[in-house]
Image 1: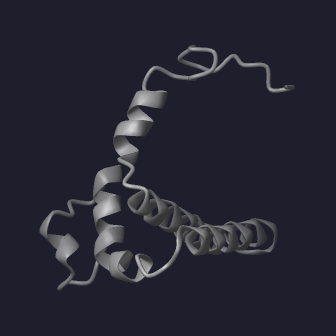
Image 2: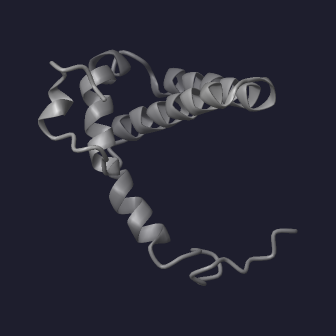
Length: 112
């Protein structure tokens, strides 16, 4: 849960939509993230993915959870830079199931 005086507490009810996560990332990091180029943000994301891979190989469950959060935070920061509504795009792309085979449960051939 955010600190008691954190602005997110005004609407936080124990779960968040993707749009609310974007708002939270904007509140926490938006000003600093806008000082970075998109290339710098992508490099930061790659570092976080590397840390997640290392946590999966050698870390604890808690390490993995923290690194998953860091990867998502960087992804959401990039979506803010690109003015992407993640919730809308994910809904449009995946609400009906697999966008490649159009099945609600994917039946794509994974060998390709």
